[in-house]
Image 1: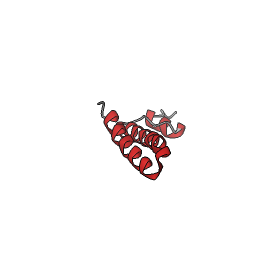
Image 2 (image 1 turned 30 degrees about the horizontal axis):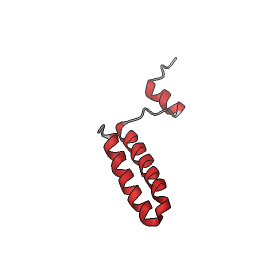
Image 3 (image 1 turned 120 degrees about the horizontal axis):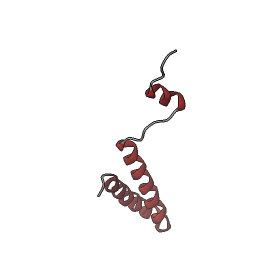
Image 4 (image 1 turned 90 degrees about the vertical axis):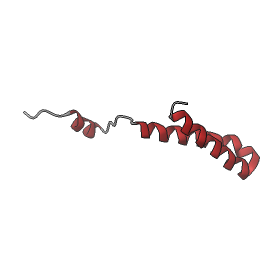
Length: 65
């Protein structure tokens, strides 16, 4: 009987352990969209500025600052 390794189980189940890069991507994406939504009432310029601020905030928070 073959022993199934942990990595094989992860591949079978589709489970993937989160990495720092994945956490960073989620933080930046979430903060960017939140900034865009917050800036939406101010038009396209507000969306652009809100997105930029959100992306910077997400990057800093994912680094632990």
